[in-house]
Length: 392
Image (tube, rainbow, N blue to C red; front, side):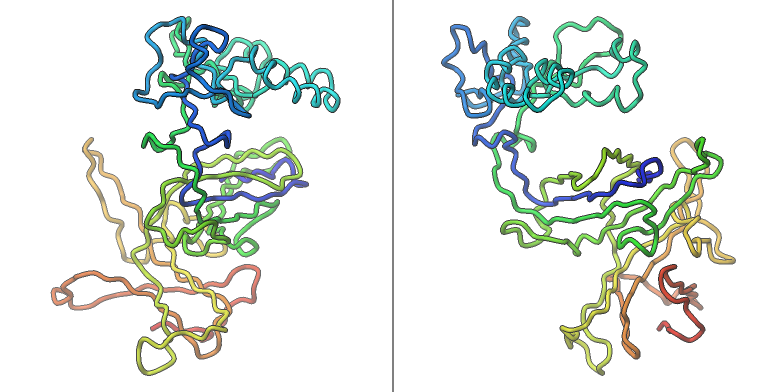
């Protein structure tokens, strides 16, 4: 993630991840909304839709994911989850508009009155953006709108749409509306000058040299690694990670507007597992002390992502050549070099932690095995001295 606080250091907030089963019912009316089942609510087919507290929804179940073949129906169907166009939104949400008018400036109310549901789509290369010399963020702000995001006619060589299929609340396409909320929740605090040592999930920080702005600030790319087992909260009756269907992200508690620019979101499988039993006794399968406050996690570091890690950057061990892979284009490419990373905190004197990996391998073909290891402390704690820790 690009550091979002380089320009606004008087801001902070939280980023949340939800992993599990998420309710698909956006309007919370227990009715599935899908555009291709909508009709003209002021026409003869009015009885084919129902009016709920929040929207207009079709009465019949969705059989196909396609708009009506009659192009004239697109204006009644491509209207978003609320089921009505901007004109009908002003009628349906008249009470809301009257209350908002007393609390908004005239210019802000004029924008709200144009689109009371705030669901309109606008193409990012629209001429209005060019005339206003809009920034990249302003050009893409309405790109996820649902109303009129699949127009029939296209006047430019670039499709001025966000897809050709109708929008619906059935995210996993199983023809049912899921209303369950069962998930693991992860909270990632975001604040100015966050770095390795003062943040629980930051693995490394890379500052781009030679790309400073007018104030001399260089962009900081922050790598987060969040252990999936260390969730902050569990919502609903979810028991384990065997049935993860949805991922939800949201931001909250910010004092000012913030933009998060993320280069990559990945689930990384770690083949090394932490040993959960005690290593102090002479036999296995003895559980650890319940009052134990030692934190221990396994992770990975590699040359391409952690080559500039602070305080000690990752380098290829001396005498170990990087493996070479030959791609389909016959280009010789050096593969990424990586290593196992063991992190522990509050380890008691004389105590130990271990990890293991299950695999089948014949070591008889080798004469010697080498292992390269080094230890480093976080910048926020006291430095390590010789013989403070040992490995086995």
